[in-house]
Length: 82
Length: 473
Image (tube, rainbow over all chains, first blue to last red):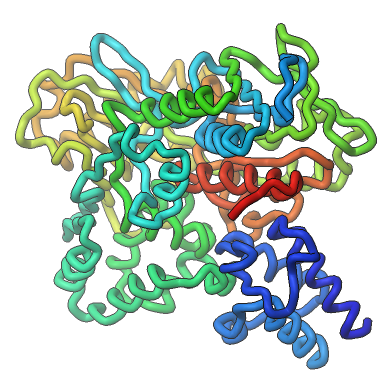
């Protein structure tokens, strides 16, 4: 899967969970401020990404996440680590 | 979008519990034509009150949380301009936990609560402070850390002392009906921060004020509500909702349907055969509901000083093996071990409850009176000496009563049991795979309690408005 496809797919997952259109979501979009990602949606998002990409997000990864781009980068990094 | 026909609505909401009412208010406020249907003759779900022999009793929900400045419940109520109309009052202290060795008080001032806990457990002083500070300051995304953990794992990260862990867990057990080793850390921490550290709020003269005021506001905003109106079927064509069939009123069409009712009913009865995928039905069928509650209602003729402060929830923790306490409740025969009691704000009644399993009508017919008497004796022995001589009215609601009035599966008090494995079940999200069908309420597997379901109702309204492209932040 290309980086571009992953990015598109993650934005689509975030759109599905947040209810905002994909056009409103870009890498610099802030998850809580722009997309109203609350604690419920934060968990839904984490669980959805772990399931889709068969990755395991560690506790230490969580504090770094604020934006859509950071979620995309984290997913790519975890995927590359296999 | 407004039409004059009463055979078509933009949204039909099934269930006038707090989630359904909040959802309806926000959709109506945005200009949508909304119908709420409720099978009971009054709105509220588990948040209702009733009168007997001149006494007013709250049926189940007896206070709520999350009403601090910027708390979710406060923001939802303020968004509907109901803050002054509701006359929300906070009782301080909100909760007291009584164990064989300690009496711990939860004050409106969290620092004071922390100091009290530190005084009782000096060796854990720093851990107590860290636990409370961290939970209060969690960003939304930080809760993702808790997604697979149990509340016990979270407590073990901070504390060594088992007595302290049991004291912090008893309100979680009472309000979540699971012990720390089984309840998710997400649910446990939300109960602790939103219901206990920010708890003790009350509306008007009784809890019925909350659904009644939301209903009044819903009507002012143009909404229609029909009580004593049972939904029989959700019509779906080509995987898209078309409307709802109501008892007596027949078919009413709508673009969206929000089911703020029991999920088993939604999927097995209202949707009927061949609509939802078989694997979803199989999964729902295998899921475990939360325990119910046995609720005692006492009318008091002499408000005596032996009674606790009016409006304060008093929890009785008989010993520190909280897992054992849970299993004793789950296998209940006629004995009450742990419970919560509350002397009503009007100083006329007592509500006490204990977690209890679902049993059939026959079991309760044979055991209800014995349990009532055992329950009163227990309260008298451990908290309120001389209580029985002041009682002029007594009755109780069994788990079967909870089922009868609300149609919640097995009278479940908190929706699904919130094991980490059952929390955030993807199939039971607010937005379902059926176009136009949304789920609200505590059966969505996300959250529970009044602030929890109010928030879900609000969020479902936002999801629908986003679909309609009329959502404004």
